[in-house]
Length: 192
Image (cartoon, rainbow, N blue to C red; front, side):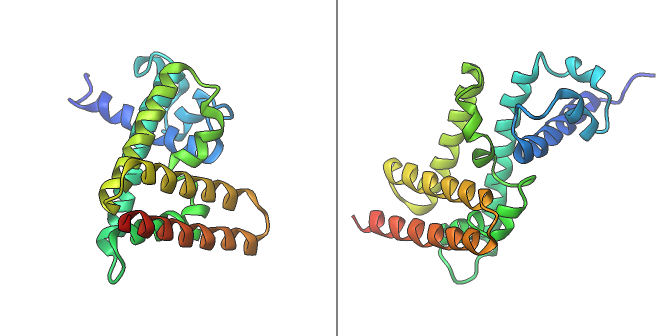
């Protein structure tokens, strides 16, 4: 009996979702194809009917994960009451919730340290997706790309450091300082 139309696409989507969760939490190198397939509720034997190799999966997962993050940030904007749209994005991105929920968080902080050792294909996709995040920030804040690069770097670096320390007070302090400085940088660049 043949599978219903769209079945293969749905299965592929489950694999990408599983990979996104795994890569966000543990990076690329630490996660094997069998672990990803198990997370999708599948056996690892079916992987190659969906992807040529793990690198193709990493590339597609980067695209998916950035789209997912932008969707989360747009929800934060929609729920903002008094604050500006860009402040809502900064407050969400540099929140304890985003810091602690690595499996659903932005993939940029999770993979930035190991992408330099990835294939050129994966690095290109990562760069394009990072640029898409920067474009989102620039459009929302109405700032140029130089300022957008700085804001994104500040936010990603803040999350990396806040996740890396074991002292909760220091981690919270890093988040707070990151929020304050990202907002000040945007205000300064909007005025200039």
